[in-house]
Image: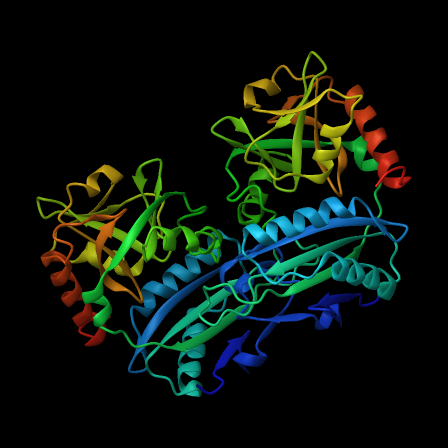
Amino acid sequence: MADKYSIINGQFYKISEATVLITDLAVQRGYGIFDFFVTVNGEPVFKDDHLDRFFNSAAIMRLTPVPTRVELTKLIYGLIEKNNMPDSGIRITLTGGYSADGYSIAKPNLLITQNAFVYNKESFHKGINLVTYNYQRQLPQVKTIDYLQAIYLQPYIKEHKADDVLYHNEGEIRECPRGNFFLVTKDNEIITQAENVLAGVTRKKILSFEEFNAKAKSVRLEEIDNAKEAFVTSTTKFVLPVLNINGKKIGNGQPGEITTKLFEKLYDLRMNRKAS
Amino acid sequence: MADKYSIINGQFYKISEATVLITDLAVQRGYGIFDFFVTVNGEPVFKDDHLDRFFNSAAIMRLTPVPTRVELTKLIYGLIEKNNMPDSGIRITLTGGYSADGYSIAKPNLLITQNAFVYNKESFHKGINLVTYNYQRQLPQVKTIDYLQAIYLQPYIKEHKADDVLYHNEGEIRECPRGNFFLVTKDNEIITQAENVLAGVTRKKILSFEEFNAKAKSVRLEEIDNAKEAFVTSTTKFVLPVLNINGKKIGNGQPGEITTKLFEKLYDLRMNRKAS
């Protein structure tokens, strides 16, 4: 692919020339937040939900000033046009800025990058396997750039023949590093952890579907044993069936009925833009 | 001060022009490690301890290739000479590199920066106040670039009229964000947490002083109440008396006798280079 453009503080840069000074607090102290959404036919999907979360993350981490919603929206559409890339993933990052003392928050740097992305339904049918790990994300309500543990755990995931890790905190289920986790109980209740997880946009949509009985509550590891279905949600994963956890099949080891219905509903909503 | 030089992957850059691409895994995912030491009269203090830890952190985080010890030492002396700055703090950072997919570890970027630093004994006499907070650093044995929680907590520290935060994990004392924590008991035992803290170089020296009775063991918050003295150690703090924790005086609220003796021993060792 040709060298794509990114945006740093309002200016276009080819990605091969898009840089920040090494004094940035992201490089020095891992301090920054981001959000990520996809575009379909040149339109950001669930844009307002993502921008709401972006501004909320920035506020909690005291990253200021931030661009206005109008400015940010203009930059996003400008980048889609510049790259001529209607189907993509767009990441908006806000770093801690060029810190004079390497510790204090400075004026944030706003980075916007775009990559080609088209959802492939095959991934739904393939599903994934998970392995559990005892870990609580710090500042879980914020979409920070901190993925130290997740990247560190890649060999652990491979050793356990899994595709990703499912975090729990002393048995209390949390989330995957890049997706929320759901179970479907024997009573067809769809449940996901209520506390100390990222407020995923796909998770929020599923909790809002009136025809489904989805609830955020406390969910423990033991509940996996009796679950009929399990799935992970995220912007790139949509609704992704979990077929196996810690080497044990979920249900019959195939994408479940409710998972499939949820997927179809969400797919329709996102790809056919029946709602924003 | 004039624009200092830094080193990126073996090349000198003025710090105002020292950059990394925004695809670096430090910017994207907060993935990187570092070490930090001071130089006195152009000589790195406890260099081998810091380089040992640097290489250990890199290995645990699977950052490879790393420069050899000889190459790294040459770069460090080269930077001291280029900046003509014999008394300084030098930071060596190794990032996750320019990741193609924004998640997988790539060839690390090696960043070396230097700042003027001269220890001021006044800071010893002034001491500091701490406020406690329930938090366990992730991957505590590794000197990662993750300081999200520490920077996030700055307003909490100010609200509590403290200078820094002391982390504990459900009552088990850990460390400060940038320094190890010690107590002196009524029996003149010098104790510091054994587990799940950074292996500080100053901490290691203190534990090695034969004429002092210093031990690494489990230490709980309740033990602060009966302590005669408390102090924090780090490369820039040396031995720094803690006068007050959560608004309660330690001992008589002045630097204690054993803390002072330890400080003098360490000061002598570091500033007068009686040992390396």
